[in-house]
Length: 223
Ligand code: IYR
Image (cartoon, rainbow, N blue to C red; front, top):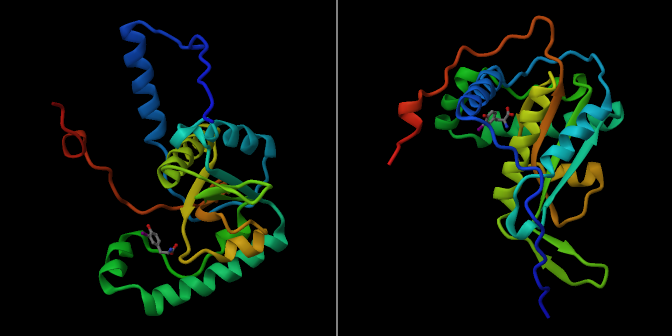
């Protein structure tokens, strides 16, 4: 038996004048263009409620059949951060010295990345985003999640945007493979690590690669 839909009037939609819309869109762009992926973090702590609000924001993302196929594991414990660093560096050593084809290493060269991941211990929080391919019900049945990867990607975008807007820097880190995160964080097998978001203030002397974003003409067509 499928459930009947239940509709309510659209709540809280805001309408603005045309000028205000343009001004808001411009401000949004001017703010988000300041976001840079940072690899040099300060250990300065900050209020955990900031992360909680950003996770709530991420949880508003559209998702396949509204099944909300995400889990956000927030790591603050120095012991767990050390375990994650150790496991990630094992994978990364393998990647940089054996697995990565030269073409991939060439593509990464402008970013100056390597197998050392001190930020995994320095930054105050690591947010591990998991994607759930299905939900396991208590009776053992499985509920399939549709478009789980796309949905979690959108939620992660909202999360990154929220953290940036709150005045924090992030690094989207994907040690590969990162199944070790399930065992370290004791997450069930229906959850697949999607991305690890290193979150904190940039180090005072943080530097970022001198790279640019593509212009509007290159990333869009209007039909
Ligand atoms: N996971 C590795 C390699 C890496 C891959 C991509 I694609 C990047 O944009 C950056 C790094 C690492 O974190 O160093």
